[in-house]
Every structure is written in structure tokens, then in C-alpha cells.
Image 1 (tube, rainbow, N blue to C red):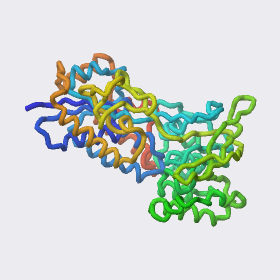
Image 2 (cartoon, rainbow, N blue to C red):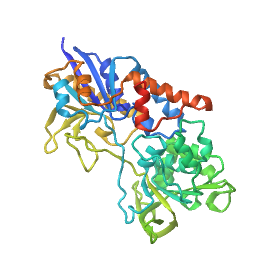
Image 3 (cartoon, helix red, strand yellow):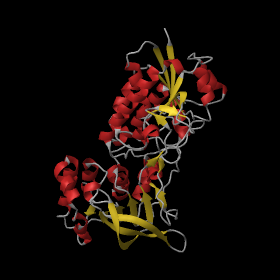
Amino acid sequence: MTKLRLAIVGAGPAGIYAADILLKEERAFEVSIDLFEQLPAPYGLVRYGVAPDHPRIKGIITALREVLDRGDIRIFGNVRFGEDITLDDLKRHYHAVIFATGAIRDADLRIPGIDAVASYGAADFVSWYDGHPDVPRKWPLDAASVGVVGNGNVALDVARMLSKHAEDLLPTEIPDNVHAGLAASAVTDVHVFGRRGPAQVKFTPLELRELGELRDVDLVVYDEDFDGDAASRTAIETNKQVMVIDRVLQSWRQRPAANGRGGTASRRLHLHFWAKPVEVKTDASGRVRSLVYERTRPDAEGGVVGTGELREIPLQALYRAVGYFGSPVPGIPFDEVHGVIPNHEGQVLHADSNERLAGVYATGWIKRGPVGLIGHTKSDAMETIQHLVNDQGSWWRPEDPSEAAIPALLASRGVRWTDLDGWHRLDAHEIALGAPRERARIKLVPRDAMLAVSSGE
């Protein structure tokens, strides 16, 4: 009976779902799957891209853990593709590979001054507050007035984490260094800018509601932003999600802090709609001084046009949260415009043609771009797996497909990899760190410390 040896690069939801779907697929061959992850811990953006005060979203980890804990998928953590293991290595030891490397960079916001001092990408800030081992331990939080550009869930996560009082994060898995940094923050005002109106936002009702529940934070919305057009009114009347968002925003209009004239909280979170950023102005030292934006209005076709009216809000720091962007994978074609691996339904294509690259597949955000929720990742993986199963005749012909080959190869190169038992040790250690303080866990941040615990040192 034919046996498929499959490598999957990336142990986030996309990679784990792909492995799970293939193992459950009706097929005429046996399957052996190795999952490679550059970090010592699995779960990708569910661990390192979701704010620590989102336990309901992090519940996804429970389902992912169940897949890994079955024991029919090997995991090699702390292994960097392109450095510790290469495409040529995979061709020698596997029949095919699926890349599920996601999208972790910030998309560009191309306006003058965006590269100023204290102008940051949201993805970097998210990585910091989620305890990613490859970012600095400290984050500059010396600004009193901060701007966040974007109207998606990441923008709201960033705004919430900046405005929320640090002690209110203590029940979560927030790392100690992050709590200390947020506790010393100088922030008093957070401004969120979106170029469209309240009926066209990309965030979900859950994310929005959470802003209104922040302790000692006034929500500031402005009456002038709610004069929508017929298309906005139709969206509110016909789309349940938009209807809920409108209901929440309308309730905030009744609060004392509406329009910025009242409120008693020590911090304020301002939502600016119909605001298209056009320039970041700087002071003499090159640091962010203000954001200039143009007021927009509906164009009657679902988009917006500029009104020509420019406004300026003083800021000392700015975060752009306008989307994630994929990163090139060594030796694999890459679309620099869209930030994805070029593919047809998960079958990777040559960079200069539409011909398939035999044995190479993609799934998740590196396949389709950073859009959709976890549910989309499952259906996305199904499509890729279906092609993989049907492409049996074009798989690679590995020289040594034995399962012993990869541990021997990594050992010969001095790679300090972690396995499933190592992740269990790290998981238990983090939970034990949190227990005395009645916290879910306390994340271990330094990579060396993670590896030491994983290896039982």
C-alpha cells in the first residue's frame, strides 16, 4: 500500500487543520505527517496574534490541542525552514509539502511621514504584548496621545490594549514584562481612525462591545460621523451584524463623553469615522507630532471620496493596523504585490507561468491573503488537501522517506528542536507559573527559556 510522507511548514491553525483533514480523508494510501514550526510552541497567531484578554477566541487552542494530542502527527518545533531544513531536504525525505506560514508582517500605509520615530506597525506591537520570543522585551509607551489607523479587529485590539488599565489584564496570560510595560504607560487618549463610516467597519460586534466595557475609559464618538447615506441605512436594516454594531455605537452617543465634551474617566478612546490619513507630521527630532487626515463622505457606490477638508490631531505615537502581509518562503515563488504564494486552489504555481510546481502546496493566509476567520481556514485546507490527494501521480519520489531520517538530519546539524512532549512540558510550566496568582497561565517569553523547559532541563 502506498504511503504518503507529508511535510507541513507552519503549526498554526492552517497547518494543523490541513493535517487533521488529510488524516480523516477517505483515501487509498497511508499517511505520515511531520509538522515543522519555527517557534518552540505551536498554534501560530492564535497564541501570538490574539490579545490576551480574549479567552473565548483562544478556546480554539483546545480544538487544536486535541488534534496534536492524538499522537498521529509529529511536530518539530524551533526549526526554521530555509535555515535548519530546506526544500531540497524535504524532497529527499517527503512526497509533498504544504506551506501554512501565514501572514505576520504589517501591510504598508503609504503616506508622508509614516516612517517617523514612534510610528509602529500593529503586528509588532501585537507580537510584543503576546510574548513573542523574537521581539524586544520592552516597548516604548511614553506617549500620552496615541493614534491607531484601521477599522478592523486588530485595530480595536491594539486600541483596547493601549487604553485598558494594566491591572485589569492580570487574570489573563499576559507575560510579566508586558504587564510591567503597560502599567507604566503614559497614555491618556487613544484615537482610532477609519476612512469609511460606521456601517462599513470591518470589526465584529464582539470586539466593539468589549471597548464599552473597559473600566475607567470613556468611549468618545462624534455625532457628525453618523449622517450616513442610503447605502448605510440599507446595510443597517438588512445586515444583522451591521445592525448590532449600529446599536452599540448609538448607545455610546448617549453617554456623557459623546463628542468629547464630558466624561470623568482617566483615559479616553476616540473613534473617528470618515477619516482618511494623509500625512504624519513630525517634530524637530523626527518623532510623530500629529496626524493629518481628510474627511471623506460616501460615494453612493459603497466607497468613499475625499471632501477636501483636512483636520489635524496632535499625537506622540501612531500605530498602523491596515492588515497583515505574507513573507517570502525561501526557494518558493512569492507574489510581492499580494503577499501570497502564487497558487491555484492551493497548488503552488511557478512565478513566471501558470504551471504547477509539483509536490508543493499552500493553505491559510499565505495561500489566500489575510482575510477570513478560523472557519475559512478549515474550508481552505479542505480545498488544498483535495488537490493533494488527487495529485498522487505527481508527488516527489524521495530517496529516504523513513521517519527516522528527519531527527537524524536535525541532530547532525545541531538543531535544538522540540517535540509534542516538549510542548506539553512548556504548557504545564506556564500554567503552573500562573496558578499561585490565580491566572490562566503566565507565558514564558525568551526562546532559550522555552527550549530549556521543553527539553526538561
